[in-house]
Image (tube, rainbow, N blue to C red; front, side):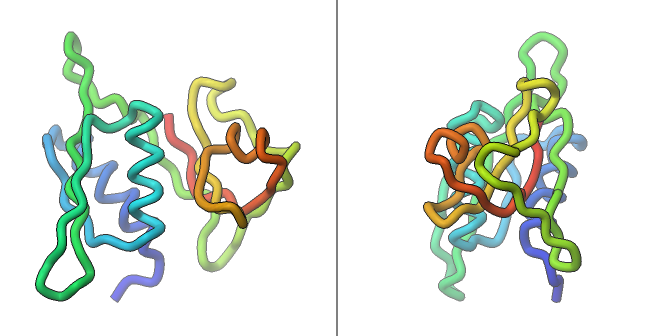
Length: 133
């Protein structure tokens, strides 16, 4: 059993995109579903689908996005920031700029999972989950 399901989620997406796969299957959880929705809304994945399985945990199918001309993955880097051994928190006005504003940071706040920009607009701080660019 793994101790960090978010790192497992990010690693599966990273490995599938680097291997050139079109679809990646990930065991579902509510936090992973919210991260998937953010990745879709920000344009990093093509589509996603939540499926129910016989063990009631569910499954997330994510269709990865690639550049039409160069066939390179849209997600250049997806990096875990806060780990179970070392949590990283940030206040609403101190969220870091990822790749000088070209990337996003995904934050878990008291008002739900959102990007760093949205958390700054809602004036809430939280745990920095990952950077995507």
